[in-house]
Image (cartoon, rainbow, N blue to C red):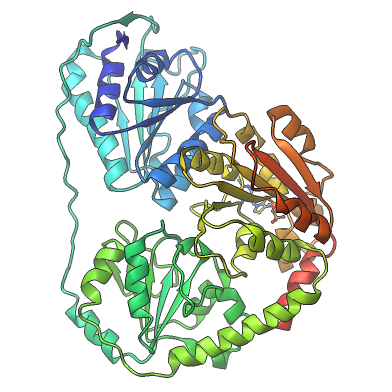
Length: 551
Ligand SMILES: Cc1ncc(C[n+]2csc(CCOP(=O)(O)OP(=O)(O)O)c2C)c(N)n1
């Protein structure tokens, strides 16, 4: 074995291994050499080398999203660290465990004019669960051990990002073949939580309410949750609203929220308004549901989340600090079905919306909307679908999705700066084929994602190139200004040259027939591919508007 001579490097690496960290993404630099030497030589660690720290961090986020285990990011000193910030913020809001380890200079070299040096300690304070600022003094070993252990454990237990800043003095590249530190003894930390298991009063409210909505946001696929919800939806007084990223399915779930509620007037909203709203899972995409519940607030809003108490609709009355499955496990034993025509009525509305949707699709012209219909109809079973932000995630929410498909999207901060990198990270670790659908601005923004040796052969990108940020044409505001182009940022770029540079098979389509055709063999064969679909920049928004009008 080869180890860095630096005690701090040994402490960090042995601690990561002791706490079962498996994946470490390293970006190049000298200051982090003690960590690079240690991690790459450790048989229990899989290391990855990615140059661009912004992309490296999102790639790590993609692995952590799929494994639900902490991933470590390692970088050198200076601005390298700051490039992790977008992914750190995403991990913070999406509850994904990430451990950032940044190499730094010793304190006496900060702010005196040394090169590649910035104030690194606590840079992520606003969006991290813990910041361990290590000390390089010989008498700090025990304190450092505690800080490292806390940073690793909090990332895992509280599912979010933590930061370990570690000063290394030169020389940086010296190695030995025996550890100089003692074995790391694992000291589990406990997190104080006020868990109130007395749900009986809540069950009473629930059992007397004639109208209940369960709304499910982003959620890692979970068979137990699916079963619990299958049981709940047998109750006629319950409506289950799901987002595409909730990864639960049932014919009786309202899976396309915007489609159901778009045509409603105030009087209908009052009829739909539940007595109790129960929200499970992570963040909600649908803007319309937020507007609905903010304007027509239910008397009770209970949010179930093991970490976050989110008052998304400004009417939260209770946060249950539990996982959804733990909560439902207990709660479902206390509740009983009651008869009501609430569910039946709204499922009839859902059916009528679907009829109109199907009629509309029959005659719709070539557009983003039409392209989503075709793509979603052709994606094979059991793939993992990664979605870009902007209108991509919103279009997908308008269609019925194949229940065998798992869906993920960076909705923590809804950034367009790391979706491709995240998708590639997720693809690199997944057994299933990963298909990534993205808009053009998002794709070109994160094109360094393709500068990556770990793209699996079955990875597929579907790039919907509508020549700019199409969302800004859909939103009513930008068009009213004299500065639409500063929102939409039109361009004539194509991904063709990037594909050549990064060795992806490039395929293009410019009309409905071509899209159908090119998708036929797109998912087979063993090399990564990108299908670029050019859609008409000037009519996409009109088609979408007509779709909603037609409902
Ligand atoms: C990092 C970041 N910068 C800016 C934005 C604001 N923004 C939201 S959508 C969007 C345009 C996205 O365009 P594209 O990816 O082509 O998707 P489309 O709107 O056409 O669906 C921008 C700039 C953002 N979400 N994240």
